[in-house]
Image 1 (spheres, rainbow, N blue to C red):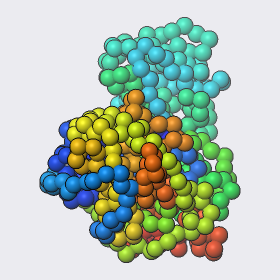
Image 2 (cartoon, rainbow, N blue to C red):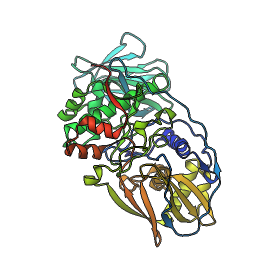
Image 3 (cartoon, rainbow, N blue to C red):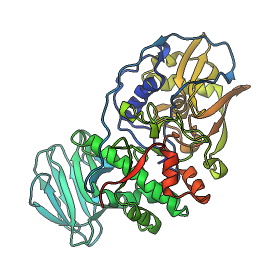
Length: 487
């Protein structure tokens, strides 16, 4: 689950809240951001997809090292806000369906659905009978008060229904429900859900069918079956938690992108299909409830806490997702290309980026940082991963932030801080040691992604040393067990 795209507005708001929750304190120079709210969550940072997620850490171990280009000052401390508590779900008695957002369209812009030769059934959600059948590929266009459907080789049909009506599009005469849209083939039934901008395109698909496309997208095809099986169980556990979390409150459970977990849609990859088949219904459980099994590409040898990193839910502050008591070291360090890395950033550019990023993210005072002089580690978590950092600028301006927030700040495009820089220009993780060399900020870093839960390169590395899926998961999520929820 790499994060090849920048976090959306909800995730940005979550990261602000998470920054507070993880640290237990926040400095007044970076006071509580405006508009902070619970985010969509996500299991960001995958091995094969190509990006990285967000990571903080838990625990406290003084760091004290850093990059210094001037004098700093100890800023005052404020109290963080309380967090909303959402219970983890119990294992479902039967296979659930998952609602996957595969994309969106704007009003007046059509979307082509279906492959040549397919026949599509279209109905309004909640109604038993289809009101029309059309030949594919068909063009669906939403206007304010109607839908227009243009079948293949036919004339456009204006469907005068309520502007907020959800269209359900299914394929007829095929052994398996699947549709072609956005250049890919997606299993399931298509729901076109109106939004203020246009409509969201949502696939309703059985969980086990969905998982094969996740595993195929998240891992390299050449990796072992045991690593694929571990990935299948982790991805299933995460999806079950997201499905339970969003039921009744949002029209989709997960994104098809790295904002949740990457999904290839329909896949023919035999190893991924076999991994899902062999682990059917298996979930990670802790104290009777499903573990939201976050995972990332490469932990860099030290894991992060989920709480305050990829989730603000206090119910996720559990042993399987904690750095406290977690094993030290990781097999990812033996062969991941991102196990260790170094990047050099011009200090002038760092100052410019922080000035642009801070106000957008709710940290208005960072907009006054004219010239960054110091970046130093304040604390590390129980696993030794960088947890909090202090940045100081000319004029005795000082701000303390979680390391992951520093990472997102340094990865932002200063011209448009709501968008990240190109992937190759982003900081790979929040686990790094900073130093200043002349007019440059140099980061000696470790890993790729948020570092929570299973390390995908670590899983493959462990399997090469003889570990099976159960041993991989036992190390990745300590104190959890595997339960078979359904057959």
